[in-house]
Image (tube, rainbow, N blue to C red; front, side):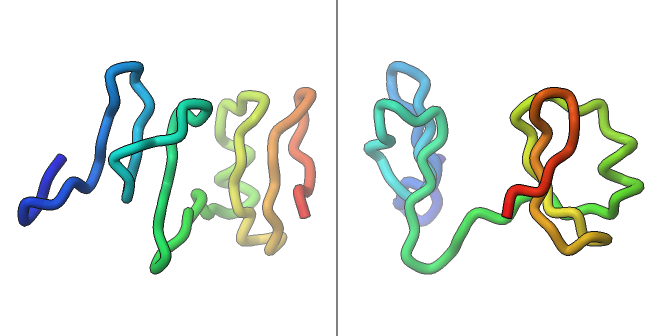
Length: 80
């Protein structure tokens, strides 16, 4: 995807996606490259999080607990 003649989102021939790069790392499905921004994970309350149908590997920021949480081995766990 281009805006103002600048690539913003790039998908290579093997399906790797780059945002902020036209050469996404081959081992990454999604490669985010920036010196001015960061990844912002979904933020939700504990009630909203618990209403999800979770899958192992999900990551959210629980704004009720003020904690990053990941779903692993069938349960939510603090990541940090």
